[in-house]
Length: 496
Ligand code: MFK
Ligand code: FAD
Image 1 (cartoon, protein in one colour):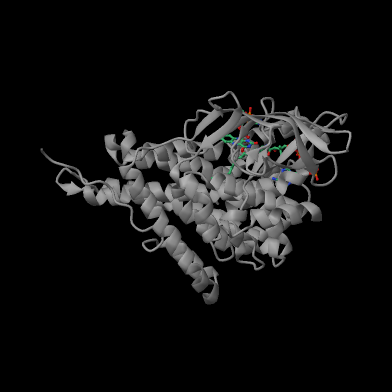
Image 2 (tube, rainbow, N blue to C red):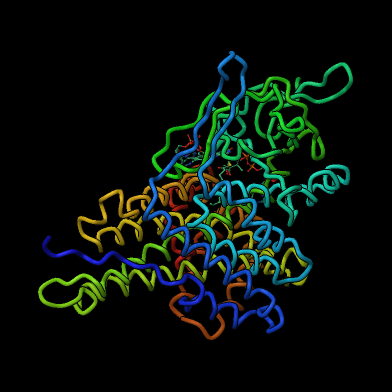
């Protein structure tokens, strides 16, 4: 046999990292850091083990069996190994529960765990994010009965009692525009609400609960008439018969994640609050899952760049390792710089979320969080695709070959920009966040945030905010111009 190329090695994602430890050292009191370390070590160990395991095992996808041998409908889903391990790993290390502790660093500590766990989880983080979002929306609803019923399960640190929640919004006629929702909520003779309809994407179909948008029977058209309902999917160990799994989607990426098309045939449901304004009620869930999306997108970037950097020390071309080729080293450095900016933005949102929820944020920080959440989601989503693509090129032809494990990074990254609000929808959401008195508070926030920082960034943000301000009382034509430029505005702000 001739020359054999050494494969890239993954350094320990926590012990060999520079960015996350530096962030935690800057922001956390020493006692909190010390308390966190054992979980971060363990999640880093798990990430390393999962990478090594993937290199030596055949990749699997979830399998749906709809009927048993005797013709009974069973809708059984077999999950991959990482998914079977998910509840154990996440409850043991409080990946989700940590975010709901009562101190201002709770969210940062949660997302530090998420960052280390995400790639190894094979997108088990997707239903975890939705469960976190459901817990947050339930708390915001103030519905005591549902909070007492569901939160102990969602935030459980014990696999035996832990429940996952889905987020059932998208339908065939409405993903971005959920106002087109066709699912109807009807009250039966006992006054129990029941959902009837079809949900087109359900990514936590193995979960025990969900929050679902539906139109109460007789309510008007449009999104304002939608209500937000809590549902449970299991009756003991059996899936409820009113929930039918039609099929699993065959997807470009996130292939270990069982995303299903489902029918609801009278599934019992409980409204979170008033029987309208369901979008307003689900917004806390959206903002939390969008934060997960940003952190998971930077985790994917980190994985791709780390492997590319390692490979550059092992691969020789023109007599030298790639890392000693000035242009290759510059390519890696440019990727690293963009990644570090995205990391800073995503974790800024995590920290702000913790302060706002704990009640220790200044008023302008509430407005800043409202704006930065869609910006972080949309910018990191786009950047993940670009950086994962660039990282694959750093491996040459090997980056295109399935059993290196590298193409999966790129295919998975494509989802970050699509679900939880596409880039355009989130650019428009950023405009929504800039209306009202949002602009005034934001100027205060930005000035404080950039104090002593880069004057060019401050200038660019001011210019972008001026552009938004000049259109607040816009005519329809001006509004159309503003909307057409919303993505440019959002990306300028996010990069600043
Ligand atoms: C591994 C990574 C983890 C990630 C997990 C991801 C799992 C994937 C699961 C999914 O994809 S679930 C489906 C996600 N779907 C979306 O994100 C829908 C995208 N579409 C939008 O976000 C639209 O902008 C929206 C549905 C919100 C438009 O609906 P409307 O009703 O036409 O919007 P409208 O009238 O502007 O807003 C209604 C109210 O909600 C307003 O408040 P008021 O009633 O008080 O005026 C808005 O201000 C408020 N609102 C909307 N978005 C908000 C918000 N409030 C706070 N934050 C927001 N983001
Ligand atoms: P559309 O809304 O039809 O969008 C098509 C295009 O139009 C996009 O480019 C969009 O940016 C653009 N567009 C739409 N409106 C505007 C506008 N006003 N201005 C400018 N451009 C616009 N949903 C759930 O509810 N639960 C889940 O668990 C779930 N899991 C998912 C898992 C995966 C793997 C994927 C891919 C999707 C999942 N989704 C889920 C659905 C996802 O949230 C939607 O696909 C997404 O919100 C986009 O909606 P849509 O598919 O209807 O696209």
